[in-house]
Length: 374
Ligand SMILES: CC(C)(COP(=O)(O)OP(=O)(O)OC[C@H]1O[C@@H](n2cnc3c(N)ncnc32)[C@H](O)[C@@H]1OP(=O)(O)O)[C@@H](O)C(=O)NCCC(=O)NCCS
Image (cartoon, rainbow, N blue to C red; front, side, top):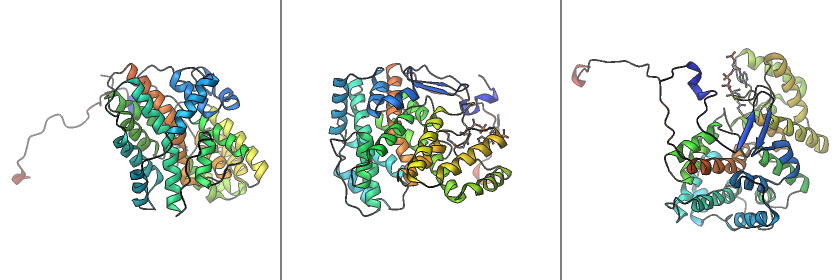
């Protein structure tokens, strides 16, 4: 058994083969099924990208229409789930609530025990369609607001903003949000996707795999970083405060959220796209969030040679889209559900139980002492 210290955290360990996402960490490139991410964000909708990840090719107009219709038909959530959301403490974290709701949803799927690929694809569509509804309902219930029914005429991005705010979103906001969903859709064997694959590899169901993934995404070293970035931007307040703030944190050996990446050794290509969006939004709507972010980026480059990751500019972009920061990580799930499902569907097709080993460093053999003598 390998006891190489680099296997801690599974750095660079290859555990499976995949046709989904290629990450070139040294040149900062990312593609889904062979299409560069910047090409997809410029030319596709989120729905086209999900179809690509789930079927391996971009949809025809007909296929896309049918796919969207299936998503639309599955957006409503059972009344029991709405009651559960209403009964949850208002101060509970949205990620905790989302994890619980996704787990509970399995009770309403009569095909749960059907292990056919059609049934697993259907479960994926149900989760993709219902997660935005769960989030918007939980947010509106938290603020004692009336629930907004899903709008079948709207795509995922527009419908989410509509159900959250209660009014039809501005086209430019919708397009930017749609691109954000594409950017976050899949990213190889990141921690939450790996968690989903591990669960699927035991031949457990789609809901269980996604519940594992949501619990894993929540952590501050993974999806939770975007909310932490916004807390930092709020604390810094203006660009001229950034230098002292960051140097002080680095002196205390604190991590600066939104920087560094296990795979990218140069800038994360998703951060490049989000940085441009942040710049555009500030120039259109004012504020200083992009300026503060740029200042931090320069300081981190100079001091630590660390580049921003996807979470860094997502924080300012979402804030300028008027999305509250406690929804940043849940929104990651609205998008990443597409990648999680693509990855577990791939896992089921060519499954092998994922079961690594630990290098035991504890006692080899101890003399047992009965309870009364200890
Ligand atoms: C993402 C992350 C966990 C990847 O970590 P990793 O590849 O395991 O890198 P390591 O934890 O081994 O860190 C390597 C060095 O860089 C430093 N480093 C890495 N990220 C850092 C950060 N965000 N701020 C300050 N220092 C950082 C570490 O302190 C370490 O320094 P050392 O060698 O002097 O101890 C890490 O960069 C991080 O914690 N980032 C902040 C959280 C975040 O933005 N997560 C979202 C990821 S998309």
